Length: 304
Image (tube, rainbow, N blue to C red):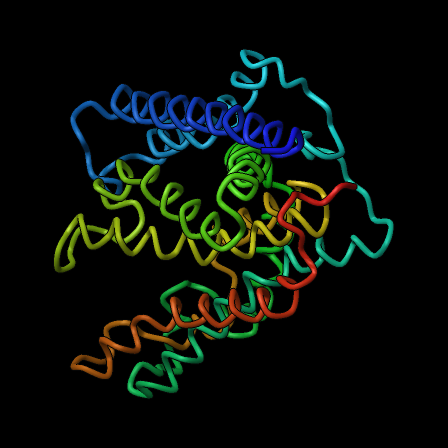
């Protein structure tokens, strides 16, 4: 075995140890927090807003774990470049495009998802459903703008996750496993990390077949598809901030068609299939990004 191969093998072994340590800290600290903050397992919808916000502080622990592991393993805290925390922001070489896409992609996904729902099951359409939001119809067109602006401003909360997942976990997984496997494994890990919240109904409620196990599986799929887009944004921009912005805007549920899709308007097989329109939209968008951007991405995280 050549010296280069030996050094590569040693380097990958070291990366695996760091990744394992990071995942241990991320899961142990976060799950312990969820247990301490909600010892009785109160359902999400039964919590007051203050308790929900308190519990949501768990979003910060992936980044805290990132910093802790870097300190313990003496990896350093470089802001930019290969092996860095990728905290820099640069608009050179048209990198600004990825910041713009970070705000627009969630809107595209939600509109496409609702469009697919209406296409599969037109009975979902309700021209008066927007009234349940207690707004005028013309205000629907401002909802995406509001979500993008508020999401960008409030991206610090989502940064608590993205600095960890996209800034540390995914670069290491890509080096160790290669891109295809890393995108799948990383998405499953991210989904499982949310399991305590899924079990109290944060993501899908509690009134569904197979609760909570089906919900956990659905979230793993969601996180895998969303993680593909977030990872590509991070690699193409050389920064975790587009991922943080997209994550935050995504959580704001931007959309116009949502004001015309009544989930109680239809039932039956077509309605059940149509209810997965959001997942279909995620699959389409993630696939397009992989086709358009995937060939240009190296197996190593891009240098700034």
